[in-house]
Length: 176
Image 1 (cartoon, helix red, strand yellow):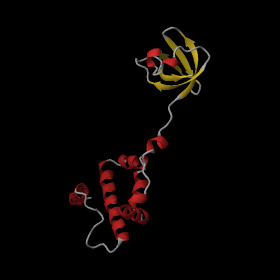
Image 2 (image 1 turned 90 degrees about the vertical axis):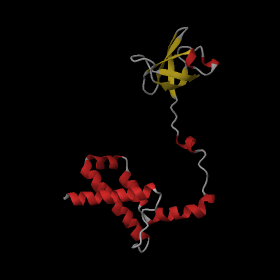
Image 3 (image 1 turned 60 degrees about the vertical axis):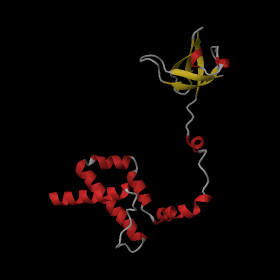
Image 4 (image 1 turned 60 degrees about the horizontal axis):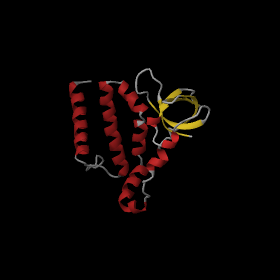
């Protein structure tokens, strides 16, 4: 591999970067006949980028696989994806809003537990799933009804990291 070869590839990638930075379609070229040629041009650009990444550090290619970049690029370089992109302008009004996206994807972090110890100032809760011990007190609760707790009752709570190293994690927003 010669210096001229490396320089040529870096120059082409820089041209590609400039086109993307200026919001110019990277598949537009004079000598392309149809969309198949356009897709193949994008694939060639991507292959050139992969070569340079490999020259820098071959393990970086493995990282691209870990984040599914190769699969996503494969999906992007299909006639179907190209068709969908072309339909955006004409069919956008018919696409449903994604206002409730958070509700569909957010993971419920509330845990179930049992109160195992209570004093006037704090309570200890054992998580039913992990059997881990959590600390809570009245100031960690948003609702006044959550306090006082009694030993043996089942509760749900939101776990938070311990405020000091070596302490138990905290149980906030406890509900009976």
